[in-house]
Image (tube, each protein chain N blue to C red):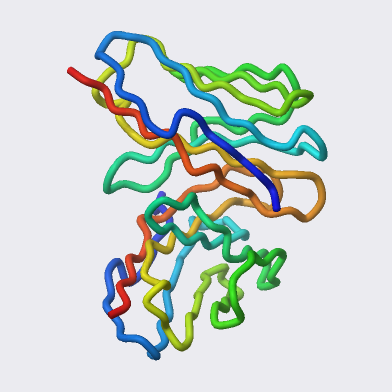
Length: 112
Length: 113
């Protein structure tokens, strides 16, 4: 059974502060790592798909890094805004005909 | 362009009944995946269909089944419902199988009484 873990489970951040959280995944048989943002009452929305060790992706104030050798990815949010409040999910896919395995998410709440 | 459409959005069933949920993917997307989300759990993978073939299946009992039609629309069926089947069922589509990004529907929330 694949273990994809996210930490912390939840955090509260003051508006304007920057924050980051972690996704840990198996370091062997890596194929891709996805990040999704899931706002309350909406559908999960893709942020990044990362496939190469050392990959860095950026979308506005949100960025992500990937280390496949040690099995982790960081998601960073710079200058948090209330609209960043959401659950952030990562998902791991291994080589071969493997399913996408999701972590349980980090629930981020921005305090105005 | 239209997103991923799931129907029905909400439904209430009783134990022992069966339910069918429908998912229409984005036009041109050939892969459809289904996930179950329950409180405290991450998204649990149910199955993936690509070009009418089941490519992968999660660790769910045989009461959970699915299919995909030639127009890429997909249905999932749960027979002999149990209380523990109460969950949000999400469908996601992508152009191909593999590392492609998923586009999710709004989900079908099933309550089993």
